[in-house]
Image 1: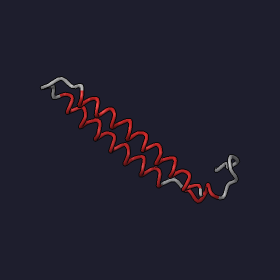
Image 2: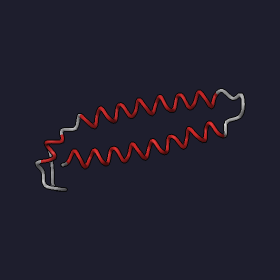
Image 3: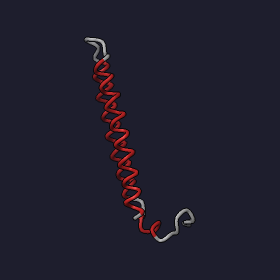
Length: 80
């Protein structure tokens, strides 16, 4: 149950970030000056860094020991 709630929250966060990132990319492409290559380079760098950070977040999300938290009562769990 704990993993399901955390996965829903994580998915919601990722969905919100994807919408926000697509708005950034759209506005960078729509309002860049013609012939200005820094706009394309910044979009590529932004997407690459976002994908790397998403992979790290996903990696560390799955490394959390969810079964330890499932044994604790809500809001009272102290793990040494």
